[in-house]
Amino acid sequence: MNVFEAAKFLNLGLITAKGEDLTIVDANGVIFEKILTGEAQIIGNPLESLFNNFVRPEEDLPKRFILKNGISVELTISALPENEYYLISLQQRSDYNFSDTEMHDKESRLQAVINTAVDGIMTINKRGVVETMNPAAAGLFGYISNEVIGHNIKMLMPDPDRTRHDSYLTNYLETGHKKIIGIGREVMAQRKDGSTFPIHLSVSEVILNDRIIFTGILHDFSAQKAAEEQVRRYAIELERSNSELQDFAYVSSHDLQEPLRKIRAFGDRLKRETQQMSDKSIDYLERMISAAERMQILINDLLSFSRVSTHAKSFKDVDLNQIAKEVLSDLEIAIENSGAKIEMSVLPIIEAEYTQIRQLFQNLIGNALKFRKPETTPLIKIHAEKISQDSFPGSKITAEMIRISFEDNGIGFDEQYSDKIFQIFQRLEGRKYEGSGIGLAICKRIATRHGGDIEAKSEPDKGAMFILTLPIKQNGAVV
Amino acid sequence: MLNKNNKIIPILVADDDEEDRMLIKDAMEESKLLNPLHFVVDGQEVMDYLLRKGKFVDAEKNPLPGLILLDLNMPKMDGRQVLKEIKNNPKLRTIPIIVLTTSKAEEDILKTYDLGVNSYITKPVTFDALVDIVKNLGKYWFEIVSMPYKEHL
Image (cartoon, rainbow over all chains, first blue to last red; front, side, top):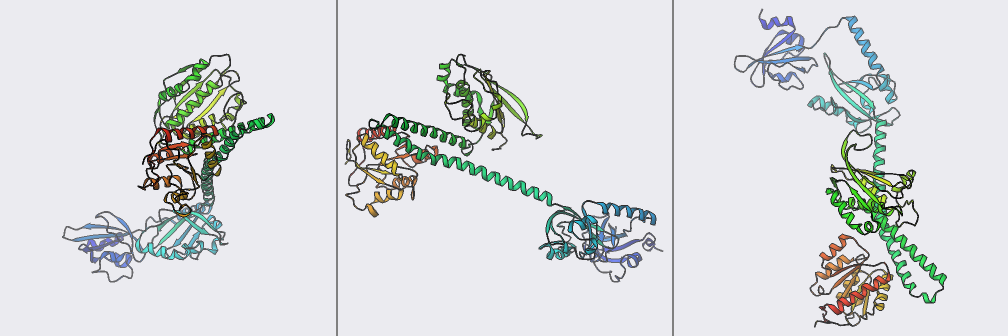
């Protein structure tokens, strides 16, 4: 007996082949009797004609293939010393033979796992016919499993997948091109009552002894999908209303200016005719004009408030020492008149928008001068230190921040109002102090636009401290 | 023929706002500026007036202005377009143009000077300030500087 035929005792199929297309020259009995049952004529054909999807593997490297008859084999190609001749071994993969009890135990355990799984698990054959369906899968679709098993899986799909599923399967079996197998994706599913819902479907290909089945794991995606959709809608709505608000503030400020300017101009004209008016009329007229004036200040303030975001320029390196110097020189008269003392530590260079940071400093130092105590020499301390802080609440990303405090010895305020003072047109002090209550609102907006924040600490009569935190670098984020 | 100290140089005022036209007229009177005033209400009318088209055909009634006060935001054709057309027209581009607008926007100021405007003035809030401006304009254009005005342009 030659070795070629002796291989049958190992159930090892052997083929000799020749040339680059591996034309079959000879095969042993195992090939004819056990592996290629019914395929008589193979000699002279290329090796690939035995398979549906054959890709020539590297030599001496065992690889799994499925024969046209569905049998799964492990195939190894070895080059023979004789020129262009190859020896090809085919080992049928019957794998390990479990004993009956072993098998039964394994099976029942596996079955229990599948039956109790939360996600749906189904198998179909290569024609798309459902072979198994676990209770979770049946529940998802509102069927009992017997209504589905034995039917084509496409009954669980809405169009266009329903009509196309047969061709998906054929395409895959012909080309081996995987569109979902091993990848998994989000698809639409259809319940018994016709309603559809999104699922995440992962499909794997299982090669059994004699055939292929596909296993699908189905995860109901409706809840996540709905939540995602809600977040998305909310974000769009927020963006829309934000930009609407900005447009509104900007446009209305411009358009509201016009009639007001007229009221003031004609009021001025009327004031020239006061010799013909009673004292009472003159008083009314003056109140009217001064109300129009106040209105105009409010509108101008609203305009500058909205400009913080609508007229945003790009971030550049800004030397805060330079800014402080410029602001102090702008406020020179107020500083001299009040005899104020300014103490300032060395400030850093940060990435920021120059004009906005300048305005921030101007407002904060200006406030410290404005709300001074009558009989006290104002003292303003500006101090900067570097800190590390979460980029946003709850985030694990920390950013290098700078904390700048502006401390004064002025009239202060009750800390219960410390949020209120940053709101637009909110004023704690009456008409005794000039202003419309826009300054700190602008400060807050500038700080948050830079990815920072501002807060205030105070007690009545004990001075106030405004703490500004700003990132040192901007990472290109514009809010 | 160049004019100096010529009080009869006509001024064309382009403003779509009736009250603003009224206030400008009052301010002219107040500041004793006696130049004949001609009013148009949009950019298209400015061009029609200058090119003597449509209702402005009559050259007697609608003399070419020696100075134009131009509002920027007007219907049909806005001040920026008017400015561009006038400065691109060899026959018209010597006429000094003063923009008188509510806009304080930096981009408007830059853009209009780029288009060749002679002065840019933001409309003041009070009438007194407007009178001041008109007085100064009159002094500057009709007393100090030499104008390129020719009656038979």
